[in-house]
Length: 492
View 1 (tube, rainbow, N blue to C red):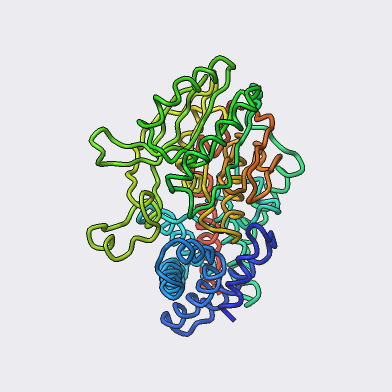
View 2: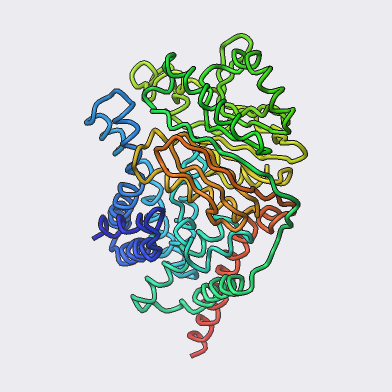
């Protein structure tokens, strides 16, 4: 039952959007933990739900390893299973911790311990060893009222609400007592979200528009880094840009240019001047190399009417660098050169400039890090994320990636401009809605008016604090309720 219930949870996310699915997974997880006779059985039961959920939800990892890892299908399957198993350990920890704490500290109900333990586990999964903040609980609620809480407290507030709602539902099914205070908090959260849904509040102010063209090259992943492909691809990107010089901004995908920045900059001199003469800024992905040629960087370059060079800060383990490379590198070069030898950029980098506008840039995987986006958005008028999801073929991975970008737009009150190699290239408005989208696996361009905004949402200002306030409210209400009940029993 645990495996099936966990797998159902993956249907809450894009492209399925069956939002009750994740609640089913968490309710079953909570029921199995609460009714476990021992901590060991709680761990095994929790692991079964986690295995079903992550096995279905991140199955797309197998595609990249099997197709491009040069390790064979069996090894690719083993690597994928090992990855899923690592993700499951955080839920196993939550199952063990909530079972132990629920029986040791009875002044708080087990449902609250489940919420706190799972939230801590998901936070650890999102931060340790660069983190993997994918399929967090809060991403399951795009089509519910809770989506409106994103500008208030971001993905962690919505995640806390999802976990709390599910664990309280499980306790209610078991007719556990002392759930009333938590039910009150759940009702307040959902009620507040409903109010914001029907009476929307504008936290930001529009300051202008920017005609923007996104170029989707649709270069096959296994041909992308070939010498004979590089020139043809670059010629296409340049020609598509020349045909759209009436746009103020043109964006190419991640590593659209496969030559290094020092190689391309002199060659681009005349082209950059032509762009500047038409008040057009080009932003493109490009690899850069240090002067001593010891370090490579996955970069974004702005040229023409704009300027700036940004180095990717969050690298994908085994995709852009090999952890413990001196030991693992000779055995397991999963994705091949040069993508597995990048170096991370500095944490403090300025935004890019597009004429008078500030642009917060994010390369591929970086858009999943809500706190990194939050810190950079203060100096920006809109967000740009460039990606190459060609690694994942026709799997659900690119759709989940697009959904995550929608959440960053809603949290920050900014347009997100998303240019990708094979799709899904899109414009996302400040409310998190996709307003224009290019088809997958086609060489094409997409043009729309991107809106610039100023101002900060409460989440941009406060970060984690709304989530911490909600949890503090749960602890205080539960403790006071338990204290009152204890005094009433002793009085009789």
